[in-house]
Length: 592
Ligand code: NAD
Image (cartoon, rainbow, N blue to C red):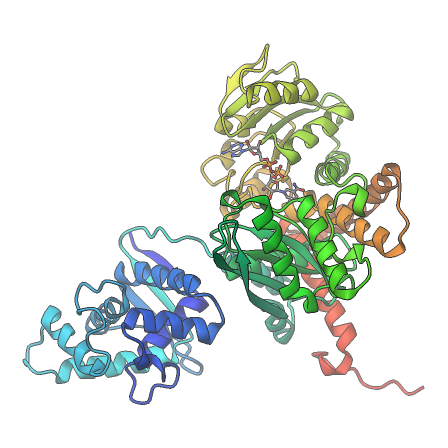
């Protein structure tokens, strides 16, 4: 069976660069000959054209190479008015393989970088050597190359069919765009507004030199993406990770835009990060890096423009450094420039359990909607970290029975119920929830399929898949983790009548209390934990009912409804703010 895969926008951009290099008048790759190897020339030119680091260009090339070398057929969509998918001929596909090989780091067909000056001949000669042609001269090869160039230079879309299954790493930005497309289609969104929402408003790439503890200098690449600020200042965490890419940060910034919108916060969405390995750095190096990052992005952030927060491998302590460095730059204390700070330097009460408390409130509303009595309702929790533990604790507090919990080593199950506090103590003592007294061992896979009322995935993404979704018996799934359910599984669960509270709603308690932190900083007046909890309950409960209403109105599942509501709010704000400069339909002037 054939597997079909589309080239991403970035891969298509790179393919066009490669093809352009062989065109008669190259425009995109005018400078490419000043480099020593075709591989390096391509990566640096691509990096310059798209404003991304060379490492990211390499990732795009590798994905593209994987797809094209496995291709059985390649179909190319020309621009309108043809608008059809036209297959490349067998000869053109072979030429494409030679082309990809030519630009790879260690070419197997053409010798590496040997032909930068006689490029067209190099390509056609390599083609003839490998594939031959009946007439024995280079004209057929040259003609094939010309046709390939023509087809690919104008292509708007490329589809690749392979016999072998493709193991392609999903690109998070592409995934985020697909979600937007689905919501836009259902909402019948104006195409112009849709175009605006497909792209980040502003992307900043910075390079930060840091003096390491051994006296050497290392330069780290950092990003800050402000995706959309139609609803207010952008907000979103800062991630430190060695594999961080701009696409990942952009996708996370898009998701923040939808998350703040769906919860009804007066905020836009953003995200940032630095490519670094914090596990290999000392605390002092991390402090210098964090302060350097703040200096590099200081002009673009602030309580009224863009407010960062912690994310993967960034901590409350680092948020305090960010606040301090920014305050030094502007000359007075600006607590509201960042959230997730320790409580004694402007942090909010109730932040550490906010995500799970918000999740608990959404479960309460879902249970009311479905007529489930939460007293004695059974709960299984996957993951026993910050979100999983607090969710178990808070659901237990309101009368639910926690029958199973797990972590990366496996889980513990007792149909009579577990005490979340004691399980935490056991985990702190032994390093895992496994082997908790008077409970049975259970695997993570078994936990997901348990007979229970509520399932809380609070560990990793892609846990509920099309394979296990048919066996899931829970009535409610409250997504503590980000992306625990695949799109195929979502469909299956919807048809089975499982009520899924999607991540952007169920785990939005964290960003809601982050917003409260910022508000308290601006007022310089602080709320008690009780006040924070009440405001959180009010905000997330309203968001839950807004999404439920949308899902009923359009007969879609809660996830689709959450995206639709979010996209609609951002689009409405854009149109309202920009008036006739943006409005797709200019209303006639009403005489006063
Ligand atoms: P954490 O690191 O504190 O806890 C993660 C837990 O998952 C740990 O108990 C770990 O052992 C467990 N785990 C890891 N691999 C597992 C596996 N294969 N099977 C089962 N369990 C496994 O992280 P956290 O802050 O609790 O975040 C959990 C999820 O919630 C993540 O997806 C995160 O993005 C999301 N989230 C967190 C917050 C927050 O405020 N902390 C907010 C929104 C979303």
